[in-house]
Length: 325
Image (cartoon, rainbow, N blue to C red; front, side, top):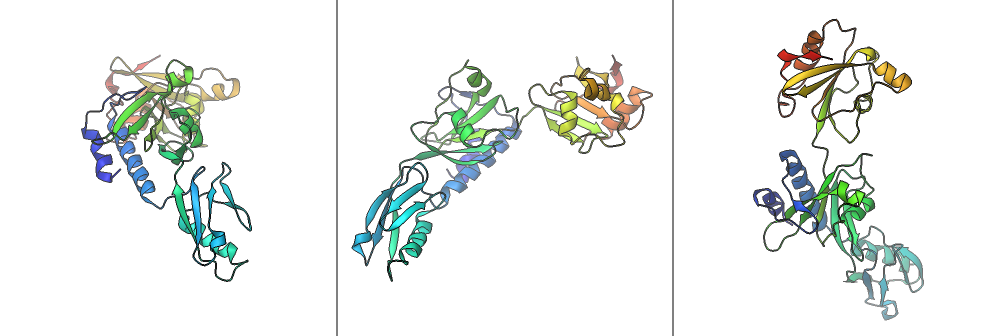
């Protein structure tokens, strides 16, 4: 996949793929997917790394007895005449050539060994985005979307996204993005999606966000994951500052086009586990420094002045109609 091809997919009307839905992706997810596709293209353009099931041929120009064929075992190793098991994990043919010459040099003066990949057993996909170990994953006897995510180390966040995106290598034409209802797959309501050679499986960041401001260590946007509460949002913002008034936290939510404000006693939540609130997309959580005399003043101080310009998408509160409950 070329970079131009990876970039061009956004302008092409996607076609539903097997087990998935045509992807109608938000702009930020499109950008993330394009970057992941470009990374996958760059990785595949590099030197080939031998994998389990590949057959390699060893040739010696001067010592015909060393000519042999070996297969990479499931443990990533292979065996040769006069040598113990050799670990091929993560190595290219060139690197194996250098290694075998060094090892055979202990037995022969000038072995001149060359390694050639004779057959490629595994085809692969690239798994990128919010996984712990992004990279190439081999397809051995078939591989599904969820299995590929597992092989890539699972989700970075404990609460993974509800959907993932597969970029199919359509022929002809540019790649075809397809969304997969991952929540449906994991619940058994939807079948898992088999991957095809050269697919790119992309795990996006959450496109739903909240804003945590005021007396927290790292105020700003926080991705909204399933069942996130006010307390977990504060934890994701690296916790409270020593100056925070945790008893007077404000949860601001757009209800019917008007902001509604609720006070939350985080001290009580932390002490007794009661009074916490589950968050919704585009909520604003504010932790003030001192006791709040007037909610409108706190909104002005911590929200109007601190939310960065450009967050109008979703954070379109009408502050003049503030209501307290």
